[in-house]
Every structure is written in C-alpha cells, then in structure tokens.
Length: 366
View 1 (cartoon, one colour):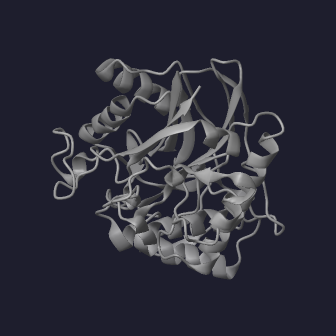
View 2 (cartoon, rainbow, N blue to C red):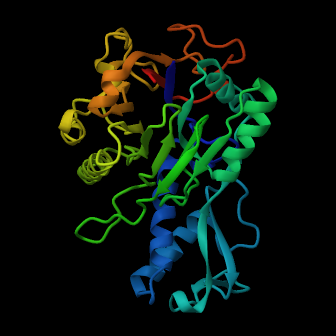
C-alpha cells in the first residue's frame, strides 16, 4: 500500500481579490500595499495629523468618502458604526474620527469571482492526481473548501474527501492554507500568534499542525505553509521574513518528531532552493522530494513555465518519511503553456488555468 501526498497552490477557489489578478498589474500591487497601510492606520487609538493626511490622500485614489465610489476600485471601506470620512456639500473631505473608539469599520480588498472554468480545472487536476492527502494553499475559508469538496470535486469528479480543514490565518485577504484528507485529522494546532522578538507575527498566514491518523496506526504531522511573497519586489525585509518563517516552521517540525518520526513541511515557500532560508529547512535530515531520482529534471519548477528559477512549491520530509519515499511528480496539465506541454482540453487559454502553480506529489510506502 502507498500513500500519495500532494501540495497545490489553488489561487482561491471561488473568489479572489481583484488586486491580485494578472490584469491589475502595478495598480493591484499598490492596492495591496495601500490596503495594509489603511488598516494599520485605523487600528490606532489616536489618529495623528500625518495619519489623517494619509487617509485623505488615499481617499482621492479610492473615493471611500463618495456615495458613488467607482465599482472597479480595488479597495473598499466597510463602515459599521460612526464616521471616518465626512464630505461637505461643496465636496470637501475631512477626517471626523479622532481614533479607533470613534467608529467601527475596516478596509477590504474588493473581491471578484473566479471563473467556473478555472474552478473546474482546479478540481480536475486534483482528481487526476488522486492524492490521499492534499495540502491546499490559497483557499478562502473552511466553508469554501467544503463547498469545493462537495459541489465540485464530489459532484463533478466523484472525488470528494471525508475530511477537510482550514484554520483562519493572519492574511486579511482570504488567502489561507488548509488540508483535504482521506484519513482522519486526529489533532490540530495553530501558530498564528508565534512572534518575533520585536512582537511582530512570524507567519503571513499560519503554520498549522495537522495530525493525520494513518491506516497502519501511526501518525503523520503535516505543516502547510505559504511564506511571504515577493509581490511588489523582493526587499531585504521580505527575505528576512521568509527566513524567520523557515526557521520557525523547522522548529515546529523538529518538535513534532518527539511524537512521530513522520513529519512533512509542505506548500508554497515563495523562494528557490538556493536561497538562504533553506539553510534552516534542510537541517536535521529534512529534505525536499526534489532529491529523489524520479523528480523531473528537465523542468523542476512548480510555477509558470516550470524552470528551475520557478521551483517554489515543496514537500519537505523528515528522515523517516524520506526512507518511505518511492515516487514523485509534477502535474502541469492545468496550466496553460501549450508550447511547452499539452494542457487539459478544458484549458484552452490562460484564464481557464487551474492555477499558475503546478501540483507537486509524492508517494510513500505505508
């Protein structure tokens, strides 16, 4: 008996922030930064003159204070109680809240629907590979993963999973990590509050612990991850954040070895194997499935065109798990690059893609 485990960045299942679409380009990247800045400002107990000026500057871009804000704006204001902005009859805008206690609300990224073709092809990739355990990267929520599992995987491909879980993480955009499993999830733990010495949270999403009860009576610890992205430029601060995430994920994995020898760190780590963060991940005998002879060598990457520079998705195994590894692979048919490989017949253009990531899988002796 073998167990097949996979990791797939699904790029959301039914809805996705418009700012993250390919069409958004530079304006979308700026909107993501502005969204984070706006929410950081309005969480303050007291708004300084600089804070208020910045809120007014961003209102000019996104028109939060207008009753008829553009329908295609990437950032929207959700107001529950009180007022943040006030617009006079002459059109002059002011900040009327002195701080967090004066109003209740927040800023969201405007969501758009993922096309049915993309959702269908996401399920087709999963059903085609048929993993027993799937690490799901970029899923909106547990209810959404459940709907995808029952209404698409099960209904369209007769391939539903009896167990699914997502723990809400630190990303406000609805970009979380989760798991689909044929085997029971016997325990869970979250690390959303793990912090660095300066008090900042380590994980951009989370590094949840999912304890899987295996058919032989043993346990497998799976640690899904989605490290800090390079979106907007790979700054030293971004690199340092990924390094800290790698160090902490490895520490959690090593602690898990006290309970089971079978531990897996999996997901989209947003960096290539040569980068310094992997000095942490490769310690204590942990290795990626890329070191197995069956792993594709012509195009080892897991994103875009699959070149070595696009190797950013991983299945990193403890030594005991590595000893059970028998086969590996990358499923690319859900990605539209017809000059490089034959996509599914339902993937006829880039907008039909399941994802711009490729599903990576590995088989282990049970």
